[in-house]
Image 1 (cartoon, rainbow over the protein chains, first blue to last red):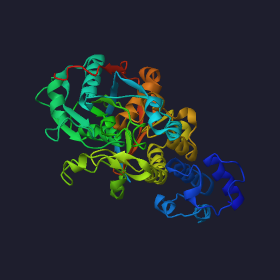
Image 2 (cartoon, helix red, strand yellow):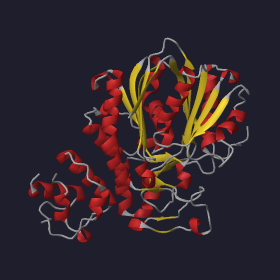
Image 3 (cartoon, rainbow over the protein chains, first blue to last red):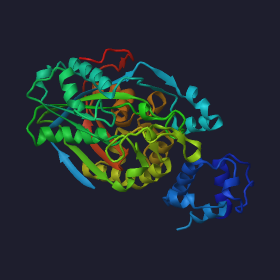
Image 4 (tube, rainbow over the protein chains, first blue to last red):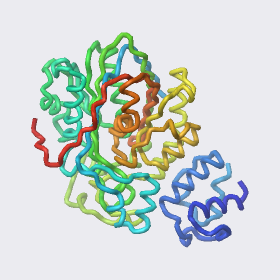
Length: 73
Length: 358
């Protein structure tokens, strides 16, 4: 998945305007990033990348770019 | 995974009971503001029936009475009764013994409890079938029910809007012409902490401190005597284990996806079930869903979904079903079976102030 595709899917999950994320944003400041968004993120990575992400690794993520890194094998 | 094929056992009927106390989820979601509405959209739970002070045994008792009447089975023809629950009447004695008395069963009857939740119904079917196939019993009554709402903290949004209460009764009997039941079962004890009531057993006995509700992760408020659920851990466990489980049970039965009439999964939550169905390429019209009416009713959710979605079909004809339960433990189990025509009485509603003595 390209970073652009990733950011598009993530903004859909978070119900944010398209192109509103660049990747550098700290997750603590991203609106809508909560426990339900985590479930949606896990489902998205499972569906599009065939990877089951461990919730512990998501907790360790500081930025949107860190989440993107989890979509790579 | 452990695979087990059992012959000569027929599921003769099933019945369910819920408290006569349906509560719209929105009413409780308001406590959580905008987040509450998001939780409800995710879980798909529009209402659920709450037990108040009723016990799981009261719901199972009502279901069992109606089922025995519907089947015209005399109480003294039951050779064993199994009660599957995580919300028993007492720490001891076993609730199955108390239900044995309330139902007026004969003394020539075995009784025991099984402590399992999400996977409990399929484990119960497996155990009951084994008693008949291997133990030479003729008729076994399986009662599976829970009142998880009674251990869910109202201000913990991970559980407060999800769980409903229900009790089920399933009747199994020896039948040499019955199609075989194909079971696959598994366990991963590493999941112990993901879904747990930490205090109140003997590892961490109750104290005044364990009863105090305090603020935890994500602003959720609960005590150590309340249910804790880590939704993300459970979701990833399910993604990891359910597809291979379904594949194993289908291959044990020699069925393709097309051969199955209905998949009845533990009603965990709508988002999870829809994602899993998509992932396993199960058409949504083959997926039994009863979340919107009853919520997640723990070990009763599979029989309740069968009743809610398939009652008319199962009453009149033979269907190929895959039942699968997965969760607390972690524990999981699936069965591929041919079911019907069988007796399914109307759903029973139990009043909250019903006298609970026999």
